[in-house]
Image (cartoon, helix red, strand yellow):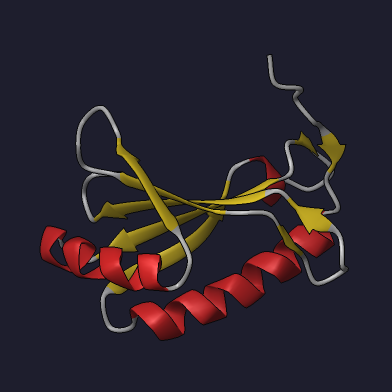
Length: 117
């Protein structure tokens, strides 16, 4: 069984890392993405978290969602399974250091389109 790692969340570090990723994603995905949001436990100050940064991208339409998929894979995100309703796609990005040179195990990216979140 895999060992679960919990950490005390440095919210400032998580926010700075998210802000950097958001700027990069906005450049890559423009004009297809509607919103890019920091979600999950690392978005909550002083939370005990897994070292995973969760990001939600809300595309403006199903058509835009489909156009975003290859842009994400070309940017190093690995596509996972559809959610059970087959409306939200999941991507992850392997281990990388954050802006404070601390390891952030994964980036989990959830891609939905408006009115499906």
